[in-house]
Image 1 (cartoon, rainbow, N blue to C red):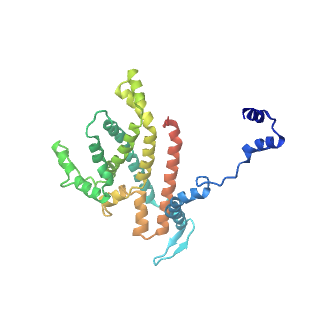
Image 2 (image 1 turned 90 degrees about the horizontal axis):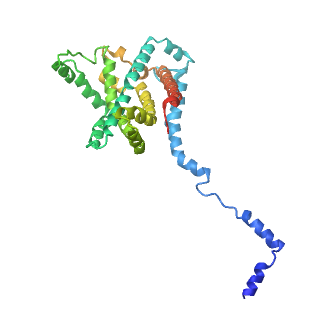
Image 3 (image 1 turned 90 degrees about the vertical axis):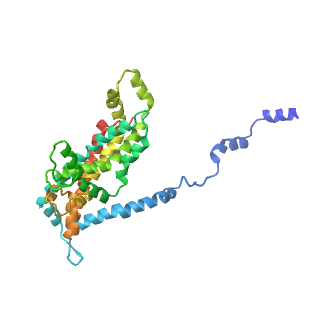
Length: 324
């Protein structure tokens, strides 16, 4: 038996067997595409999201753009007027004031970013007790209804019985009617906006801080770096992606501010001309004056402004955001 096996092993390979062995590796059966290889499976999963984006974002944008070239009638219907709404918009004296107020509110709102970074750094201190309680307290305004926030802060800012004036009176400072004074109304509302959005920014920055490797901080300690040097030379650069993200969403949110101004001031407030933003201008044209075509032109102008500022932010982030 052993001799027979040795004989078969030493026998020369025939041409037919050689062809079979050569063709065997590349001959295999054609395999059908599995679920992960078919493009239809990808369309099945992204279909609901894509449909939502088309129905609730893309189509309303296109519809608004088309509406901006029309003029609505008093009893419904619309008439094509070309660029008349845009010509009227850029000749409107209220537009410049609304853009100025919106820009000022946005600049003030950005002050909340370094404030949130500082608070998040303090909450990330090693050995701090009650960290979850502090995060909850800071996040409560985020989940509070804007109407409730506006009502509470109107009482705080009240010139007759407001808590803020009472506190200032203890220190011998004379208070004022903060929401009816044109010089302070917009700043007062911006402070409320910063306070209301502080919790979201703190949570985002805390997540970024907890993602910084401990080995980097330990190496800095070995090099003799102090807390301030570590904060500005290590923490801030490694936290820059989170800062960039928060700055983008903060600018977009500030440019769309409306609810706080509407609920805290009201239409008859003497400070309204100094606090009217571009979204309030849109609301006034579309829902009070019933000029939907003109309101659509205002909305599309705001979209262009947001788009330009976002593109500028993404271009500038290459110079100061560190992803490694």
